[in-house]
Image (tube, rainbow, N blue to C red; front, side, top):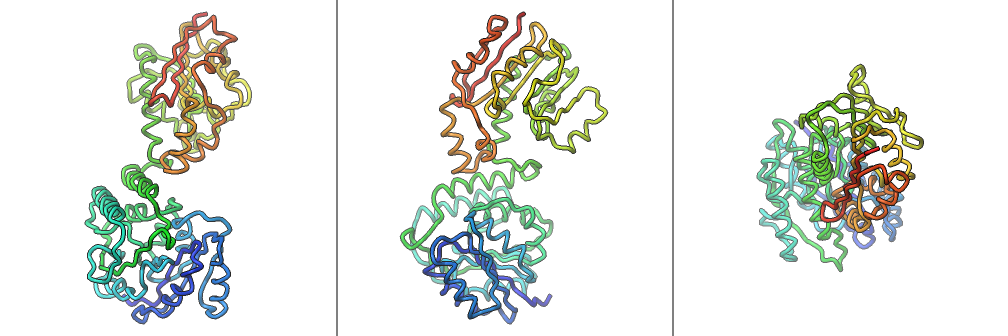
Length: 439
C-alpha cells in the first residue's frame, strides 16, 4: 500500500519554552516522502503557548491549531486531533522534546515494509541515545507494561510510550469509543487495539530524552496508580455497557450481598428498588441468587429505555422512570421488601423517603438501605477525583452523608413501630440500615 499523507497529532499544555523547537523539528522531519498534516491541540494552556502558536501559524499556514479553553488532559486532546485527522497514517507527537521526530523513519518503515497496522516506539529496546533519569519511573513503566501484557496477550516492552502510530482507518474506528481524558489514554488504546482480530502490531527502538519535574515533566505517581485502574477497566470490564469506573461493580456487588442476610428465599416477594439504576442490576442479582420474585418494582429517572422496552409486557417487572420528588406511587401495605442501595445520599428528603418506605411495607416486612458515612466523604472524593476509581458524577451528586445517630433520627416519626438494625461495613465507610415493620 502506498501512503500519501501522515497526520501528526501534537497535544500541548503549557509548553511555551519548547513549542517552537518541537514544531520546527516536526516540520523538518523525514517522513519518507509522505505528505505531512500537522495538527496541534492547545489543551487550555495558561502560559504563552497560544501566543507562540499564533506566531508559528503566521509563518506556516499549513499547520492546524485547535485551541481549547479548558485543560482536560492528553487523552481528551488526542481524541479531538484524531477526529480532525485525514492521514493514511496517524502519529502521536508529544510536545516536550522527550521524543525526537528524527525517529519518524524508524516508526514508518514497518508500515511501508511489513504492512503494519500499529507501531509502538519503545524506549527500552533501543540502541539510540537515552537520557538516564529516574529508576522508579523506569520500574513503574515496566510493571505497567507487564500488567497490560497479561491482559492483552501482547509482548510489548513499552506500553506507556508516547510514540504510537496507527493506520488512519483503524484509529478513526476506535476514536469514538475513547474515554480517558488524561494519561489513561495509553492503557486504553493498547487494550482496544489488542482486541482487533488479525491486527499487526510492531515495536521499534527509539531515542528518549526524559525531562525532570523542574524541566516541566507532568506525569506523576498518581497517574501510575490510575493507569493500573485503567488497565483493569479496559481489559476486564471492556464489555460493561455502563463504562463504569473500576471499583463501581465491586462496591455494588458487595452491597447486594450484604442484603441477602435479610431476604427470604422461601416465599415469593414483592420488591421495591429505589434508585435501581439504568440496568436494574439488583433484580438480576435476586434472580441469580434464587430469590422468588412475585413482583419487582424499580424506580429511577435513569432507567435505560432499552431496559424498559425489554421488560415491557412482563407482569413481574414494573419500571417507573421518575424522580422521587413526591410520594412513591404505590399502595400502602403492599410490599415485602424496600431497598435503596447508595440512594439516600442523593435525595433532598431522606426522612420522607424512609417514612414512605414504612408506609409501603406489609407487617413483618423489611426495608434495607446502604448509604455512606460522614468519614467516607473525603475518601470517596479522593477515589473519584484523584484516582478515577469511582464515578465523579455519583460523588458530585451526593447531598448527604450519615452517622448511625442521624439515620435513626430520620426514623423518629414511626420508630415505635419498627425494629431497627444498623451496621457499618466497607471499613466503616458505609452504613447498612435495616428496619422491620411490626405494626
